[in-house]
Image 1: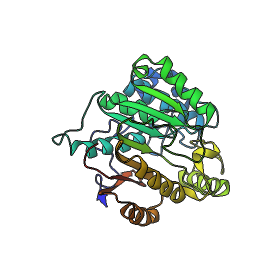
Image 2: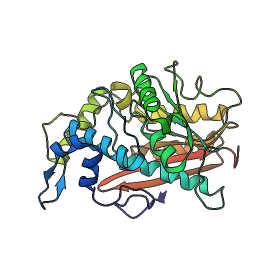
Image 3: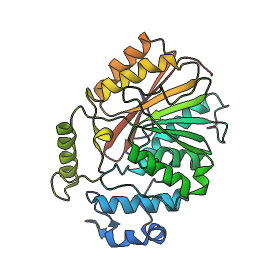
Image 4: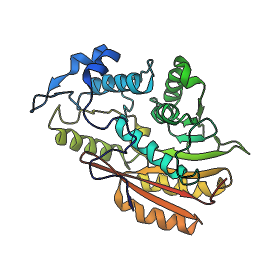
Length: 303
């Protein structure tokens, strides 16, 4: 397993390293100011167990760092932590760099497929701004599809490089959204991590207790059922993704996904090897005390 950067550090190209500049962020999103409070050292911060505070922080970061000034998600939908989402994209860019003279490729010639983009459309926003890539964002939830399309439509820079597609087949991942003859350089996915609603709720309660803030059971990032859990959990979902990837190996370069549970890496690598993957990379990422990882694989050196 590759170590991305030193423990606790974001990717070197991630613009969110270090402390937030709350003065600049409040200038982009004035409503954020109402959520500022001092931490034990007297520095300004927000209550990360407060979903409204996290939402305002995201709006401010998207406006300040990505020039997205019209962004809103429905109540109860997943509000993703932007620094960690950005890390995933920067590590994917490093994978592409190996086939581009060691430099992360930029421009619309690179096409990416975001599986389960959610209402936030966060990966296409970050990737299109950071690298100029074109994105197809897929989603099964009709409310999330409508919201993501509205975000793209109301931000002119996004409308030039992001297309949101509805996935109508609940049993499929790539099928139905990748057209015959269509080519992508990479795919990315943040799959549902949990196997049941009870497991998702228990995880959220642990998260709140770890923050030592808010009321037990109150979600700080929200999330609908399809965003948080799926029957069989992430290992079942990712094994299905691996199976389907075989059918699209001539159309897609790198397949990838976040993997929440470290114990799922070995069986996934074994399954991908059985399916004929020629290259498998596992990259460990670290943001503060949180450890995450991505797995990426491909069947051919180039598409």
